[in-house]
Length: 231
Image (cartoon, rainbow, N blue to C red; front, side, top):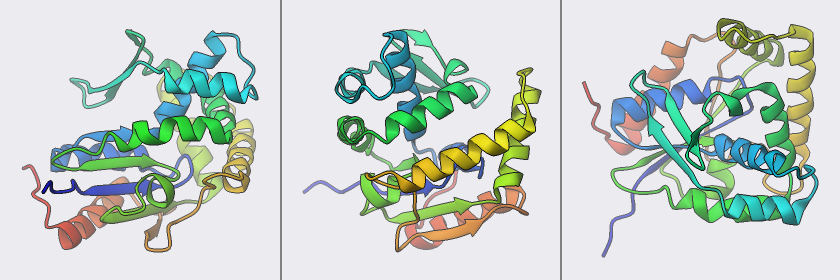
């Protein structure tokens, strides 16, 4: 009889600190990481490169089903994302890809195409799953479900700072508008809308440091799963 690998899901809208928390947890626990948002960004990027329009549900679902992608931790601790042999770690992180990903994620056939691919990441010793429906749809039986929230204005400020530090152009007012539009689209979509699972632990990160958020999550993981932390 095989023993099921544990999963910690971290859901929430963009800009709440999910990515930083998940990479930190994956490093401290020595568990692999599933960045589900990257899968939707990769699907959007691959679709646009094939000159598909973003409401072509059958065409984009076919692209999603055939993605050739690998996730590899880089020497600097960042996640290296390779699509069809090309490192697209930076290309998929622009605002254009974020908005495109939100559009294709609203297509039921695309979500269906990616569902099993996400579940296949569940392997020993455990999995950290970062996304918007990890605890509600992809891993409803996860041993620990976390849901992060934050004020939209604060999230826009965080995103603006990230983009400026990377040498990219950014407009704070545009970011506030885009975040509000993406939140509405994600929360109102017919399939797997963004929401906290009924049994999720919810934390508002608006006024918290990333260190506070990481310690909160680690404490819960130790209490629920008796995880071993890598020094």
